Length: 214
Image (tube, rainbow, N blue to C red; front, top):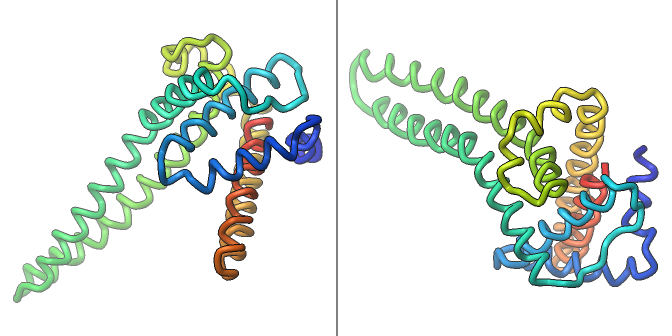
């Protein structure tokens, strides 16, 4: 499974052109529009692979790709709102609690201790919710890619068969490991000024395509 996934981005005739475009868009991700286009490309990867086509798509029909990417971005954002809100609440609560510690007396110390507990528990909760969202999002985007309807990305009836499948869970863990490994390599390459950053962008795109193939 992992070898097929790693080979997948290189199976097309114009794979170098595809990876070049995808890498450049990834490097320009801060501009948002390139990120949406990459997401649209990943939707195409899902569409093809779920129908047994092992040849990666090309970057064409940019308008349709942008629309699909925008919908995938909305799905990702919707599932990420709760973990983000919890994380924000933890940060605010931590700041407020530790500011009380600056006060005098036992009350300040007690509040400081409670603040530490709140930050630790809240951080663990935010992490758990973040991992849960990361687990659901690929299945949600796949449901959208399958039907073309954004509503299916939030339909328990569509998502339950995948999310409770051992096959999906295994593939997700492998895909997660691929993305983390790519992130570590890209982070190490950042020690090389400019060149490391550029290479990291291409590695990130390649890893994303590999993960969505899985």
